[in-house]
Figure 1 (cartoon, one colour):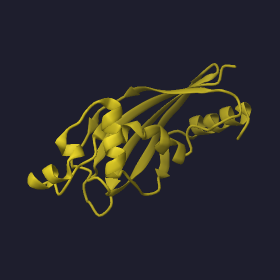
Figure 2 (tube, one colour):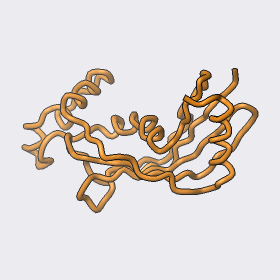
Figure 3 (spheres, helix red, strand yellow):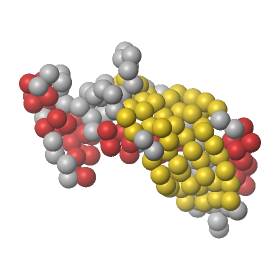
Figure 4 (cartoon, rainbow, N blue to C red):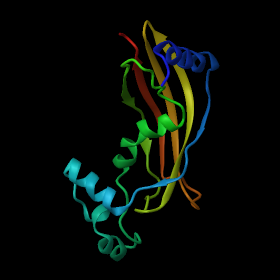
Length: 160
């Protein structure tokens, strides 16, 4: 863990850097159990996502992951990219706005995917930092990305 002051300094360094590449996450996948659990949590049982046989019968090859399931992973993916920093204090961090999201192809359950992120801008107001990022989620061995998110705006508040 870092101190709150180190966390602020880390975000300030991003602010001073300007637009830049945050990098690429490790490969990960979402299995059928996880997809079914997510469907249970949000109350959305769709055979496209929860019935492998149905997905095969319509030419999808099996069940596919809900796009919102991957969007819900953005905080985890951002941590892997180095944001947010986790100080010892209790900063609040919240996604405050999601820009345009495009899903050109389906993400099969079990397929490996990873995120490429760009830092668009970091601004600060008092103890808060506003971070704008964009994301491209690729599937292993696919030319087209699974998901492109033009902008995710997140607020980090270090007020004590």
